[in-house]
Every structure is written in structure tokens, then in C-alpha cells.
Image (cartoon, rainbow, N blue to C red; front, top):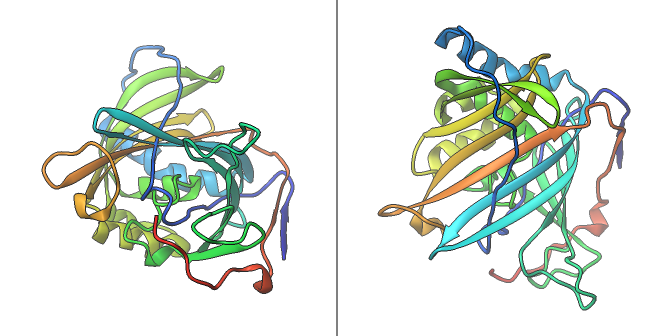
Length: 284
């Protein structure tokens, strides 16, 4: 099955078991102008509207990064790909640290994101190289916000529907374009209630599975109201098996999603049933 969108489309992504091994995060922006007179209510409205604007934005390229700090060692998982926001699908190639081939190249895990599931190839763990693994994202403890080594743009934007206590931090330059920087917290339970139907189950799972329902964020929105970059700081129970730095029984994970290249052609080919692996997957 092939999903095609030209210059108007969208996104959604995820995975499972990858972050149980390693994680990371990144981003880049240029500090800029001083904050204008923007009220807290206006800032909150701009952030909450970003998901709706993104859904109308067609397609874009995306970069992702998930970061943890384990025993003083920082581990980063980086991904890149394209998303179709109209179809709510996307494709990411996620590179794990240390996953090098005999030629010294790192073979990425290919992830296909759909509203209901995440498909992964080159997953390892005993899965044949020519087979895909299908994961029901609503069944993951974090709704696949970072388990797959990335936070897909659709989920990242839908989280902002639950934005609370938002402040405007000023104007900056991001990749040469002017953006507005907002900072606040997301109420996961509220985000799950107010998200689009295709995201509600995943976000509800995250609200139950994460240590804290209040998730700090920094969001960067361009002059058209499109989300260009967002960084979330998640807290997981230490028993979740996610490595990283935490306090007490918690592990902190920072996830950054950056969007650019809007209007890029996107074609997502989903695997046929016979191409999906149904055998046993080894534990990480």
C-alpha cells in the first residue's frame, strides 16, 4: 500500500523497544529579539493552536533527537525523515549510537508512522533484515513518545493542546527564519482529552505511564503559526527500563523535534501483511 501527498500533507510516528537500549536529543536556534508585550493567554492560545495549523500544513521534513544522561555518559539517538500531516503518516530513519556496519557506516532503523501503529525495519533482536515489525503504539506505556527513539511531529504537536502556564520568551532566528519562542508545561491528561481522535489513545497511555503528567516544553512557532521546533522534558519511572539521569525513582529524557522544508513531496509505502514479522523478538 502506498500513500502519496505532494505539497499538502502531514505526519505521525513512533516505535518500540529502541529507547530501552539508548536515547538522545538536540536542537539549534539563534537567540534573538527581546520579548514583546504578549499576554499569557495569547501565548497559550498560540501554542495550543500549533497542532491545528500543522495539520493544515501539508508535508515537511523532520529531524528528531532523544537524549539521556546515564552515569555521566550522554547518549543521543538522532532521526530524520518526512511526514504527511494530511494522511498522518511519516517515515523516519533513526540511528543508534554504536550501530556500525562492517564498512563503518551506521545502519538506521527505518520507522513508518501511522495513526495506529509503528512499523520498524532493521530492528535487530532476531528479526530478519527483510521483515518489518508492527507495534500497536497505544499499547506502549509512553504511547511511543520516546520508546522508538523519537517523538514524531504529530504527537509532539498534539501534546501542546494540553499547554498550561505558557509564557512568551521573545523572538529568535531558527534556520534563518523568525520564530516566536514559548515556554510552559503540558498537562498530559488534558492533551489526551483535547487531541485529535487519532492521537487520544496514545496520549492517554502516556498520561498513565509517565511519572509526571506535567511535561515542561519549549516551542518555537513561525509567523504562519506553524510549529518549527519543540523540546519536551519527560519523566519516566525508573522501573520502565529507560536509562538516564533521574531523581529518586525517576529517569529524565529530553526529546527535540525540528520541522523544516514544508511542501516537500512525500510518498510512504506501508508493508504488505506477508512482509511483517510475527515471530519472537529478543529482549534488548
